[in-house]
Image 1 (spheres, rainbow, N blue to C red):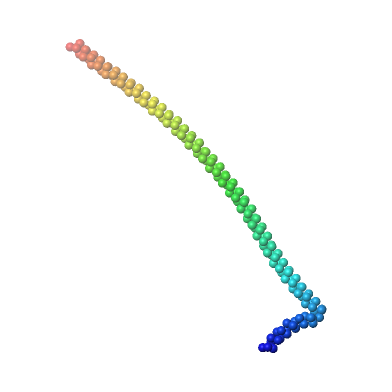
Image 2 (cartoon, rainbow, N blue to C red; image 1 turned 180 degrees about the horizontal axis):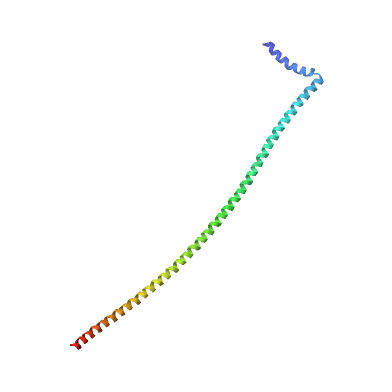
Length: 157
C-alpha cells in the first residue's frame, strides 16, 4: 500500500517532469490538437446557439403572426358586432314603424266600423219608423174599410 501512495505522489511529480521533458514539436502538436478540439467545441456551441437563436426567432415570428391575427380577428369581431347592432336597430325601427302603421290602420278601421254601425243604427231607425208609419197607415185604412163596409152595409139594408 505504501508503494502505491508513493507512486501516486511520484506520478504527480512525474507529470510535471514529463511535461517538461516533452520535446517542443510534440508540445506544439498537443497544443494544436487542444486548439482544434476547442475550435470544434466552439463551432458546436455556436451551432447550438445559432439553432437556439433560430428557434427563438421562429417562435417570435409565430408569436407576432398570432398577435397580428388575433388583432385582425378582434377588429373583425368588432365590425361584426357593430354590423349586427346596426341591423338590430334597423329591424327594431322597422318593427316599430310597422307596429305604428298597424295601430293607425286599426284605429282607422275601428272608426270606419263605428261609423258603419251608426249608419246601420240610423237605417234601422228609419226603417222602423217607416214600418211604424206604414202599419199606422194600414191600420187607418183597415179602419176606413171597416167604416165604409159598415156604412155600405147600412145603405144596403
